[in-house]
Image 1 (cartoon, rainbow, N blue to C red):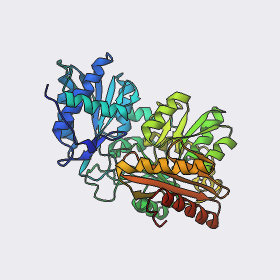
Image 2 (image 1 turned 90 degrees about the horizontal axis):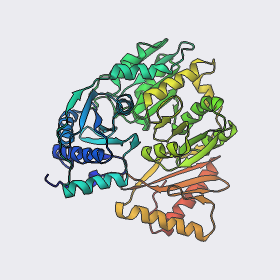
Image 3 (image 1 turned 60 degrees about the horizontal axis):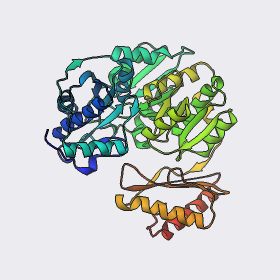
Image 4 (image 1 turned 135 degrees about the vertical axis):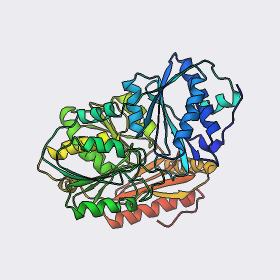
Length: 459
């Protein structure tokens, strides 16, 4: 078959993603299908599940992808439109050799992409580069596969509800952000006790109301306003493809990923004492201390949903999470990031006690920290900058972790510097117990950047 070359910018660390009509085309989707189908045949697997989100470009991308897959002799289970976790679930429910989700996630409407699983594991990093190299050679398997309509949304909804435990009635506001969770969520809440108000549940890939990224405070304002306006117990938001969650308490205060993970960990560790709980390097020290206090084993790990999932499998952790809102349950579930499932486990925790979510939040120690600070740095320089900073810190015998970039511990708290795996930026964060300590940490971070010949931004 004909060789195919991609725009190199679309072959990312965790997925394939680009701007449709500029860097990503339907021909790319067909080539991805041919390459992925070839990988499946090489490991003796014969089928795959394919799903797609609500963007207008997703159906034609799906058609092109399936064309490539069946040309290699692979049988395709077409599960239809829905959230990314439904595709992950399909690979288990249908015993598929792999899975590909066509989604632009939380990116603008002009973007789209492909999230992949192979033989029950995330397909990422070097594997994505191997896919690109295979397409450049054009050495694809050949065969005659088929495409089978395989809707399983009803089964997915029942699986989500399987671990829900009715407690006291709760009032919940849900914000789908016009993303791919809308139809599933309507079916889920119809089976739940209590009062449920849905915002922007109509699936619309133009995202007419707000951008579907629950890690950005601006995108949660409608949810916060509604929670306070109807006196709800909490509010829950999803990103564009439903694998990341945002949560606000009854006072309209945001629980960031590490705070949410601390709340969730208590339930898991009550039945799994000593278990490992994983969080990425951007998480607050409060979380790691809380896990230890609850009798768990806190593990700090690299940022990235694929990297976290791999680490979970390695250490058999029942729960993991990232500041980005990816939360992973391997406790009664499959170990992938499913914001709908996480939401139901959170309702279990709140529903079984009279303690409100805001009280649970207030029980966590208060720390003062910066948001995630991101500043531009060329792709061909960003990792070198971190390496230079590591060398400087080693020279002065600083107390730091180099699991992912550098996380430096001082008497005041900690600061982090790492290179993004998905963008041409450096990422930083600082946390201290008071404002004076935070100011000192910022000065230290800026000094290290200056020594590494980087123009330090004004934090």
